[in-house]
Amino acid sequence: MNSHRLVKELVQIGEAALSLEEKFRSWIEKVHPNHRASARNLVHYLALRRFDLRPLQEELADRGLSSLGRAESCVLFSLRAVLQALGEELPSSLDKGIPPLTRIEGGKLLHLHTTALLGPKPAGRKSAIMVTIPTVAAQDPKLAHRLLEAGMDVARINCTHDSEAIWLRMVENLRRAAGEAGRPIRIIMDLAGPKLRTGAIRQGPRFCAWKPVIDPFGRRIEPARIWLAAETSRPLAPEGISAALVFPESWLRHLSPGGEIRFFDIRGKPRSLRIVERLEGGLLAESLQSATVSEETAFVAFDRSPQGTGFRQWTEFARSMGDASSFLLLHRGSRFRLIAPDGPSAGNREGSGSLPAIEIEPAEVLGSLRADQTIWFDDGRIGGVVRSAEPEEVVVEATRVRPQGEKLGRNRGINLPETDLALPSLSTKDRALLPWIIQHADGIGLSFVRTPADVAALQEALRRMGGEKLPIIVKIETRKAFEALPAILLTAMKSPSVGVMIARGDLAIECGYERLAEVQEEILWVAEAAHLPVIWATQVLETLATTGLPSRAEVTDAAMAERSECVMLNKGPHIEEALRFLDDVLRRMEAHQAKKRSMLRHLHLADLFEESGGHLPKRPPAAAKRAAPKSETR
Image (cartoon, rainbow, N blue to C red; front, top):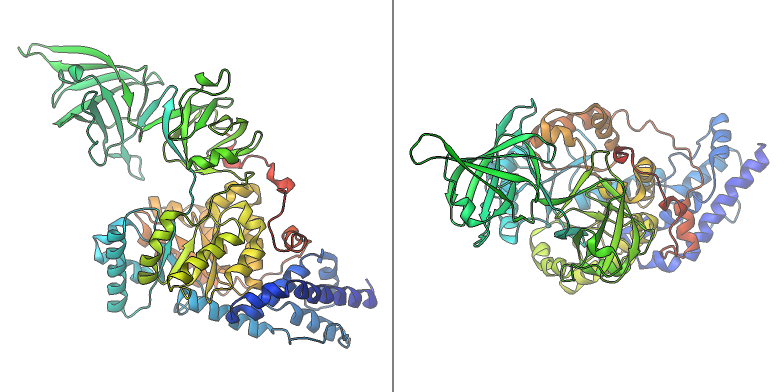
């Protein structure tokens, strides 16, 4: 490539950036003054990424010049600098309007926005560490002290769980611990959002399973607890049970503490339960063996005869299984129905009445599903395809499960990457929590964002309640949100303080595991162009936090997380160890991670933004029809 052509391409890119700025001027003018320069740079970056820059980058690198691989924070400045390095005078088309941000100015803006959201930079490392606070922190004030000492900078409270009373005790313990340690702490509260979940099993063969607690060395350290409820009473099950079975009261009368129940589980393995206590409405049993049973499993009760000369036995079948512990066992090709919680169990279509049925919540989702759309359950463990869809029931065929089958029970997440849902991101329950969050939190996380309108709804609700200054974190965990990312960010930037969370769990299911690495890179790039802090979340050092031993892959993942402004750890029994480990990794990697040059191919996300005028694309991209994640080819 000769110099004339090189200069021509650089000028063309710069002119395209200014042209796109003019097109979206009304958007830019509406953002908060804190973000106006950043909004212009974001639009410039999207214009830059509409070009395939790889040949240009190679040519620039061969000439010993900047290859634009680090131009995110200062696009026009980078283009001008390269032109000047080539000995070219800036054409009048690029030497007009507001002076572009320099690299140093772009870095300062990111630092300011990060500090406003996450607090001062931690000593000794660039990235902050966020920790999801467990329920036990409400009763154990010392846990907050230990987390701070181990390296926590930001505390996350998940409003999907617990109550305001428990959250208040968490907040009080965190504030007190931070004050005593002389360290700042930011508390972020995540709204639950419209999480799609399965409900009760309404029809079909039910299964129930339990297993004892096992330590990292494979030793059984605590038995499974099974509640045997009398059919006539059915009181609430005791806390901490693994499973619940319902039997005739007359059969349960034959048993007493010390008695035994024997059976063969569905795998043909001999199993037993030991009765430990009689409570109101039933019996509490324990077992150190794992088991899976069905409504066809024969249970044999053994009890010593009154004369003490032997044992008597009685056989019975479970009348039903507790909703919380029962499940459908699905294999590839299995069909089942999704129905509304208050809908009829009988099938609407000819032949569908014999299919198992499980409730879906919220019920409004049924009206949005269409035949041939993909559906995923339980964090991607079960993949299926909608075979027929009606307002009151949807028939699903399981297509991606392990060869031995997969369990689908109550309260399992659902992902619909190809479905246009008419659900607001801000639920009625979320709105009711806003006054409390405004009073007690330092920031709010908006879950399951899909459109710019979702962000605008939260901003308007906060404004009406006097909380318009509360920092907002938009959680990118749906494919719709990723496709509308630039417009979502420009909308969020109407607030004074904004952050972006890459919620990789749901995002991997929605976009495909094979695309996750690419998708999270693109989010990092676009957020940096907007000078917004990024929170790298989901399954960071998860094995270490849960078992005490890290996997090799997650150590590398934690090291890569250093490129974000904040890394989030989830709760687990070894969270303090995981915190210290992550703190050490981030400190070590800080000296290395800046060594990076991105190869800038044409970016489809930039096309979606420009061609749609900032609105959602009218049809899903071809990538929607994807292969199963590697972990799901079972």
